[in-house]
Length: 598
Image (cartoon, rainbow, N blue to C red; front, top):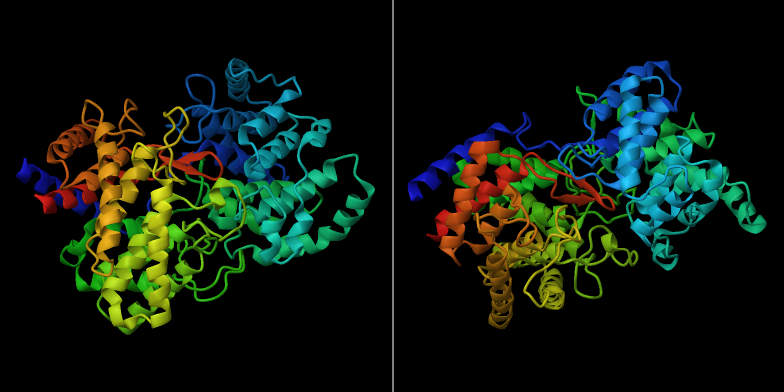
């Protein structure tokens, strides 16, 4: 078995090297998205430019040929059907393909699916159903309802029931936002402005005082929107967000606005040859740092000095050196892609720090990049000791709250920086990092469930009852904490506490393994390559038999379906995606960790 696993490792490493782009890093490939395709074709169709007709036709054709067997749409071709995406696809197909016979058939199938979900398109309860599903978070529910109005699925009377996004509040200093209970997440300012303006201008009745205030705020809000649009034209490089903003500007009477012009240019550039759009341009920083970290201390033996130099230079180059115009984040962080729409976040900053440490050559500019990244991290830690995604203390919505997987990642990034850089870290930063690690461990104690699990923020499982993914979250935090134990920078007492956390977490994972050797989101859920490989990473050196059973399943799965990615990602308020490289990267890491432990 050992020789077989070593051969598998060599084979997969070769495949990952072949996935490197010409610039010496990885870009990956996100799955095509029915939701992104639906909102993109509407944004282009409503622009009334004949030059966009082919984009619309190709997108429409992709949609009608990727309808699920039950008549609904999931976010990706491999996703289960859901009401939100099915409604958006219905709106797009009805608005763009009324004279297309295939489209008419598709509309009938979607109506049947929605009827089974107790959604009556002739009934006014669509608005309340969507708002109820997303609860207090208006980040996605209000844009969805706005597009349904734009496409004529809901009449303008329904707009009176759509919550008014307070776009005027964006004119206040960003430090005040947490006081306003904006009910959208920190990265959704473009939607807050554009969709908020659409709802305001579409509604027939207004409070006279608020109407006066909002009329006065229209032009300043549009100027703010223009100020934060990235060079690419794609807000956060996200296709749905950019399309929602563009269509709302057009229907609000701002069809010539620079933000809309750049937004549509971005959408045209992102359409794939098959007519579809992905949910985001790419996750190049994330998949690059995951790839580097999958090799661990073997990175310098698997790659040439020139390849290592290219990777280091790439990560140094894309580190933010100035205050970010989008959310005013301080310098020092990294975003999920090297493209202009990216915004610094905790997970990618931790990933970049750890990747640089794995390739560390003790050069001054490398040390400086890591130290600046650590400084940035210490400014993001919340009062509860945990780490959020983008902004400290923004609000109470889940995507802006502390979470276990990001906090575990930060523990390792801080502890390993203290270990490797040692005397190069200024004393005040060293004290901040020591305190940051201690507070993070305290948070992880509180966040660990009684059964030993941690629930992640950005990754779910579409087949669990609550769509959460405790296997992924527990595996990720376990891996981070296992690696932290190797750092002498941690005190013995802290290592003892981490050890107790790990015992409970690893025992939980062992109980979640399916009979066939795989792991899904929890016991009894169909296994995926991503979750199974990550569970092995967490259990390597703990239970060899469980790991061997998983490797047998992974090998069988590769032989049957190849390196098939699964919709494991949960992004942008209940939006699923999958990434081509995840199964490959995680399988390499699982093999490397297991082989090293035996």
